[in-house]
Length: 70
Image (cartoon, rainbow, N blue to C red; front, side):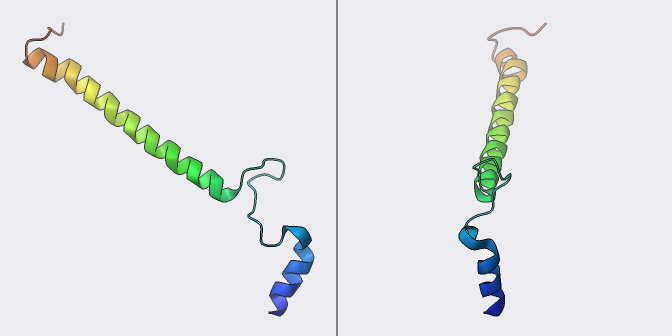
C-alpha cells in the first residue's frame, strides 16, 4: 500500500491514466496496439486478395479458356 500511495503522490493527476506513446500525441499505447493489429490483419487480407487475383489471371482464366497468357 505504501508504494501505491507514493506513486499516486508522484504522478498526481495522471495516476491511473493510460500511458501515451508520445507526450504530445493523444494516442495511448493500447490504441496504438489496436491500430497495429488492424493494419496487420488488413495487410494479410490484401496479400490474400492479390494471390487470388494472380491465380485467376495465370491459372484459372487460361485453364478455362477465358484468355491466353502470352
